[in-house]
Image 1 (cartoon, rainbow, N blue to C red):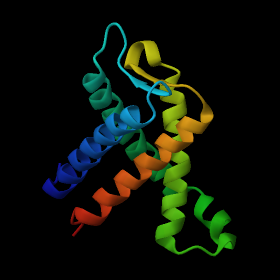
Image 2 (tube, rainbow, N blue to C red):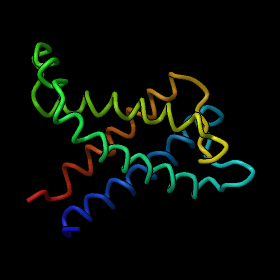
Image 3 (cartoon, helix red, strand yellow):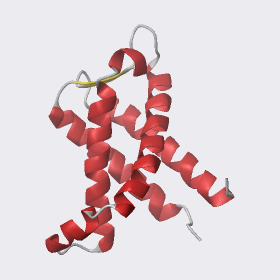
Length: 135
């Protein structure tokens, strides 16, 4: 793997894990990391990794689909359109992963908190995207 891609991958992973820990601290009782088998920090690391891997899998699907062309009518800048798409992807990923709470150790109490965590993940990923050199 190319060094820049590896740095980006690791940056997204760390940012996702950090955001999950912060979200669990802010939304106590509604976003929970850890269970009787898995510690909170370990759950953040594992779920952060899974979010990165799923995002990398979804990325080419989005590029090949007509989603961006369909959303052009919103008249958003390309960067904002990408942000909107990744926000939706993150919310869906968080909601799906919370269904595996007993295995992954991440619990979300409602759709509202899945949306909030998805938004925070998107902000964290955007920060990494802006700081990690791509070329």
